[in-house]
Image (cartoon, rainbow, N blue to C red; front, side, top):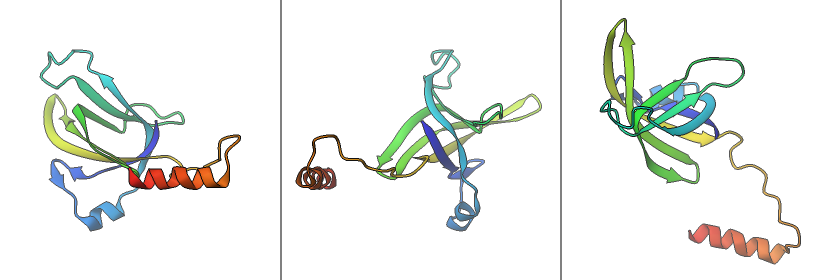
Length: 129
């Protein structure tokens, strides 16, 4: 899915609210894929990547042993392990990614044949869930 995202940690340390507000959200395609190594590399079965769009290459964020921590109407919270490479040395840090869809809520169009009362009923049901 096309998403905006913020990293909530830097090298394993939680960012303060002021640091989070100062960040510019990354944009790209958020995806979950099974690891090519099927967990044999001790990095978990799932990899979450945020791939940039529009001609850029590489990935903005790559989380190994990825898992969805929370799903909310505003977005999702994904946790995992991020690797930082310095020459041939890999250092792994815990990372949490807050992602929300591009375009926010979007425009809600009523389905064909619906009435105003049915749309209100559907909105009330959505509030209960």
